Length: 527
Ligand code: NOJ
Ligand code: CA
Picture 1 (cartoon, rainbow, N blue to C red):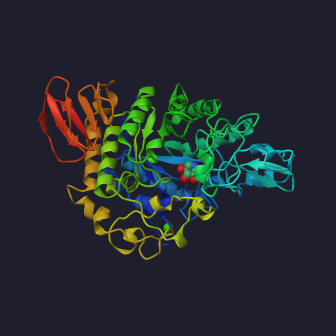
Picture 2: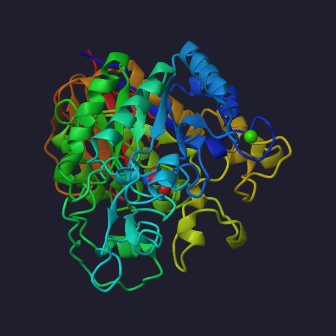
Picture 3: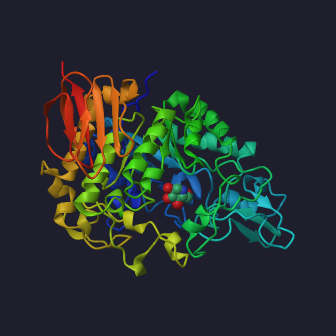
């Protein structure tokens, strides 16, 4: 059966930063609603909205204190209902972000759990006795710095948290917790949500014996939590085999609603990515590595091919999201970085699955400068050398008015220097050669040539390195991400260029084709 998301393109919205409708400096649901005409013009099929639930906001919404309530800073359930209705009227689906690995410590379940070992909610979380020396029960570390365990002095036990101490991990071996989440999924589906982006989808189940993770490399800088986390092989805290069973169950829950399940997955190795989408479990998973890699084109293409070969429809391809430096910056900055970013996105459009753009990626936005005193991300504010995620999270530049049109007169929650006119939607929208126009054209090409994502994929032979050719029925995707031109032998016949990431070249070609550097071509067989 073909589902609505096959061939679709999603767009990630960080609600705090997208559009502020009531002028308090924080983006909100009504702000998103007001920008639906733009999203519809852009041509995307679905929006994924990062968490807007009730939350103390210590991880900006990824610390949920009520999974069924909207944080008043973002609006109300009535606003959400209206957003869904307006989006659906424009053929835009709405995907909400579900955070099942952990709740906020202010969630009533955790507040109950703190009441003592006999409380019925105690077992909603992961509690262990101290190690013999009184320290944490094992060597697991938090993504956000320090051990993954905090001592509850009242009970003398530690609780597990793979992120902040204020984000206690939930216990997925508890059947009662599984039922709670079935109901939460139904709650949002009943309100019209079209799917879920699942936060830390690979993290839910933990090793039953809570074994130590092996350390791979020595730690140079204990003040940098990303380095510390990466120094361990995450054999026991993440990506456990049993996690997929949770999604088999979720698949049955959402099936009657035709809702899509998209996991944020960061498994231990590439060959484990597809496990999450085999059979009746998740529909797609984000393959996250391209979202933090720097410009290593041969390496990147090798990984894309390997992951694509393991599943053709199961990946949500991304190079940008709210957790990493923007690709235009990571890939070299300026127009060079922007061009590389578009070359990668263009190739991803031929890889099947359900790709996503991150707000502002379509404008070729680079990372913003945020003054040290304005930093908001706990990775930066709670660690000596943590590299935070604020530079990608600044407000969307709509125009050149106050706060780039994000808010009428309020100071944005995350202040940064104004973006220049050339970086705004207002200016790029009317310029046929802008990054925005190039992204919009690309979306259109994918829509008008369903073979590009739907026909059987066939990787053609190419020399090792930063060149790839992928044929799908009538379509051909050619990547030359080398710094020089490259002459490639086309399959027999005449091919019409329908899109080139680095120019407006069109026309018919055949035989040996001389590809421009650091760019991707999409071609259709001429009949
Ligand atoms: C992944 C989310 O994308 C990130 O923003 C968040 O901090 C962590 N999960 C923890 O929920
Ligand atoms: Ca607001």
